[in-house]
Amino acid sequence: MTPALSRTDKIHAAILAAGGGGLVCAYWIAFFRSDLTLPNFVHDVTDPALIRLTTIYLGFESAFPLADLLVAVTSGLAAFYLIGRDAKAVLFGLIASGALGFLAFIDISFNLLHGLYAPALLAQDPGLRLEALINLTCVTGAVWSIWRLWGHPLRRADDRPSRAHSPGPNGSG
Amino acid sequence: MTDHGPEAAKLTPETRQVSLPLACFISAMALGLAVEAAAAALGLWRYRSGALVLANIVLAFGLIQGFGIGWVIGGRGALRGVFPVLFMVGALVGLLLEGLNLYWLHAWTFSDRPLLGIRRPIDKAAFLGVAWGFAPLSTVFLAKILVGGPLLAASAT
Image (cartoon, rainbow over all chains, first blue to last red; front, top):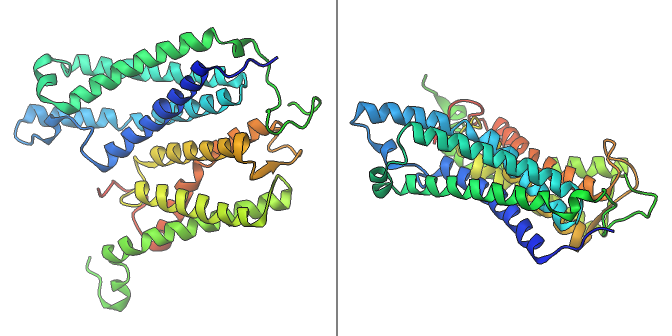
């Protein structure tokens, strides 16, 4: 029998859809269409060292949208299947969470190597504070999601015909 | 190179900015019409009423995916760089539409015919939800070809 959708499942589905899907999209729309997500140093055109860092930073960041596409789409699929109480929620949730954690650690590694977590920089730069907050949230969210999905009853459940459009007991794929 | 004459006046960036939103809207509706015609011919899904087909083509394809996502995100510069964002937003909105229909609205139902080997309605809805990601991408591509905007060159924004 398929486990019922608990209150925590509903919250988990909302986090996957809004956080893993919606916020990732919102971040990239803001990145391409505004300066909201950019650190202050990218606007400094007087210091050659900062100009070089800006080139590296923007080149590094612009490699992320295609990888984040995987996170956003698999998060959406995990939420979709979780609401339908289908075992594929676990598959897509683990892919999304694993990918999110992986990308977060790449970002953290870059920021550490380039000194972008320095307290003095964080104190004066809202863009860097936002980035640090995103890094922390991504790692925490990914670990929590993996932990929860691995212990979820759906992990041991078989795929089943959807509740809403079931063609009958012989119609499952 | 400098353009001259009345023909060149039609192709100025200002003219493109005005006409691109409409081109996105129309291109997306044309895409929707083609998808719905193909689905009807192949008997893949059925709508509860004819008005819902029209609503899907005008609202979901034209207004949301074409104008809302295609033009707002991808219409103001080149597609290079921003195309994964177009796909991810289109796919997430598509998954939302398919989920709303599958779990609550039941405006359309899938037939028993397999869709590229997929048999379960929930898997068909998930597959089509992700496939919606191609809608804003192909819409902007088509609209920019129609209007003559930058396609894959460096972003102008």
